[in-house]
Amino acid sequence: MRFASLGSGSEGNALVVQVGRTCVLMDCGFNLAETVARLARLGLAPGALSGIVVTHEHGDHIAGVARLARKYSLPVWLTHGTLRAQFKTLGSLPDVSEINPHDSFSIGEVQVQPYLVPHDAAEPVQYVFGEGAQRLGVLTDVGSSTPYIEQTLSGCAALVLECNHDAGLLANGDYPFSLKQRVGGRFGHLNNADSGQLLARLDNSRLQHIVAAHLSRKNNTPQLAVRALSTALNCSEDWVGVATQEDGFAWREIL
Image (cartoon, rainbow, N blue to C red; front, side, top):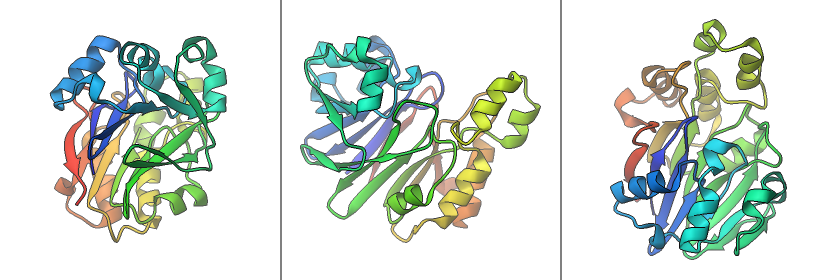
């Protein structure tokens, strides 16, 4: 199993997971041309995708889903709440499946486990992708951790973990107070310290990859995010990857 990011941040998100000939795209927040170009950087054509799983209805995760799915005849999986929130855009697609957020399913050779998260959306989920015993856990767009989240992510071989903001930078920055409250609230986004504390509570005995994701341009730096996660793992800072808005990150293989 291998995985890569097309880009991560408030201007667009997409991540691809591949097992054998099955390629699953998680979210698509980029326009069609940008998505095709970013896939090409990874050596992928859109027609090679097996489908798209959607986390929630916010534009930086869903803006490109409908056009990509329609042009390349890709199936889409999402929760009932997400479909209801974006029914005008996604309801007319020819191949849309509502998922139960408590039930795992398969797309070709990829096992997909959705799980519910606290975020300010209709029925938001994140995903764990698997191949046999090896699992990749993805957690972004979540305001606070829960025992259920930590149970779900324990024992993963790879993690893509939100480090959206530094609490001090957010508090002292130029965002309006209401936006600060939303971003930093329990249904907003994880800050570096919270992400580190969550990570420290997991079973990381199988962990091969850790990547900080969904970093704020204004309220965070890669250095602060990396420091928080490396401290939690008691590992070298150069072992922690960062998903950038411009480039995401290149393929990483789970052995």
